[in-house]
Length: 124
Image (tube, rainbow, N blue to C red; front, side, top):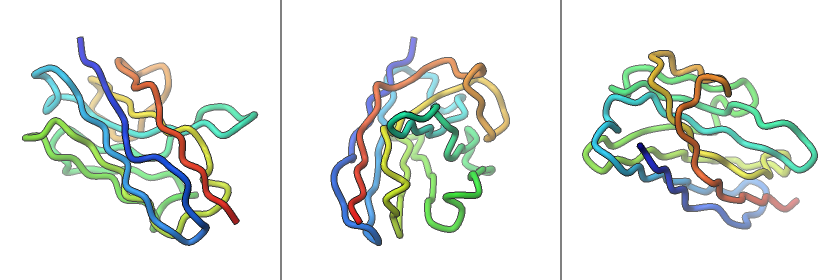
């Protein structure tokens, strides 16, 4: 069993930056593909970014590519999401997710573990 705990959310003005962190318990972190999803108010949860177990491959959805960067530190069992040039439409609860799949493109049905989420609010 793996537990995921996110942190780093908060309120930021448009154009600002935040860095989310997700710490995983357990000894299997380095074998997991990790990612971030988000769910805005009144909308379905959507995939944002993913990173392979070795950090050799990443994937971003078009709406965040060039602004967000996903990274991981296997020695610290932690995955990060650096978010720059934030926009009001980035406002959402951000969820850390883990899968045993190999592709950094994650889908809901492939997720083995979910965090409880951290709220990001971007004001205009």
